Image (cartoon, rainbow, N blue to C red; front, side, top):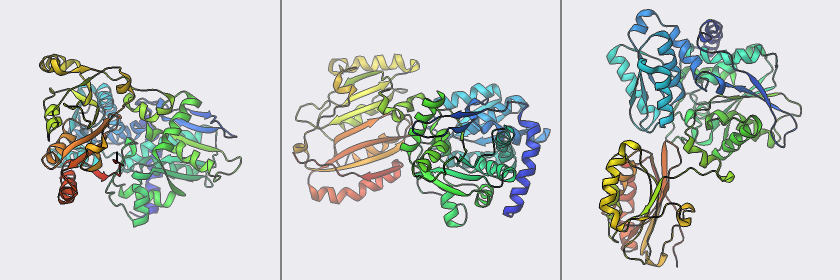
Length: 509
């Protein structure tokens, strides 16, 4: 299908979608928001006020409401890391369909619970893999084998048309025309629909697509002349963490967008704070991406004086545990449960053995360890013990009570003071490890490398993302041993974690 055909078909489909989407949700408002230091307000389309606190209900419901009775009776299959899943769940309940939703295993619990809240008995969740791509592959396989209908999160005219109703509300709000509209891009569905409708309504409007620096799959497609997979996708903005954009969305965005720009996680965090200061709302990181794009261009002098600007707050479904990463400067720190020091002998694999021994259901929220001259060593573990694991943990703790020191609330624990003695390290290699934040993901790496080197440093804290990051120090007998095993360390990492890179740490006493 040509660009012109795609755009024409989408424009017609948006007109038809108006008759469907408002069966389950009302139009969302536009608010004028003042940002400190800027001369004019910016307008914000409040998709956080929709029935699932994000825009995805529109496309999911429109696509499912377009199906025949026999297609609905045959079941629905979808893949999502969060908001599309909630839209599918809402539609399944309303239309009386059954839906199986495949989600990455590290999907935050807040999003899983929201899916079940909206869908009830009409949905079931299947946790598969560590990424959206793996979940989608499993969902497509299910659809082929079962005959159920797969509803994609973005690469579908019906899905895009549903998203386009938010642009129709912008046009009919009476607040336009706007000179600039900033729109976040993940797979490109919302950007395609918004650009298509607003360009046909206000030909002079400039539509700017905004992507995360390490998520720029649409920019990569523009550069390559078609959709291409990214080797690495950062998931701080998890709602837009897409490895590859769609064929349809690429064709439409290529013809309708005026520009694509990228923003950093720090710029997104600043935009979240701006939303809080201006509207007392906390978007999820992807939900603040369009404002981040505007603020970046405004402060770079790229926005003309007096231009009327619209941004789209496209979602506000965020794990509360992520707030400290965003609001570090405000002194808002998540509450840790209990922290202990567990003495271990200074020998290869001793820390791994302790972690393997933790009872099922107990999550490590923080792990601090640095090699010192003390004997035995004393790593600090901060643990999250849910109610279902409480009995097992109490029995486990009784076995370790004689040597466990409760350091909950201690200053050194709260401020993450990790002492270590550089002179005790012979030939250290420090690596930053990124891994799926689920039980056992990092442990596989530690098991693999423990026969090759001794652990001399470990720094990890839970951030609320789908991935965890740890700074790990590995010590070898001498420089020859380090060079002998260096390649093996990175090969083992490639088999067990998402990414690993060497970090230069000065260890001279």
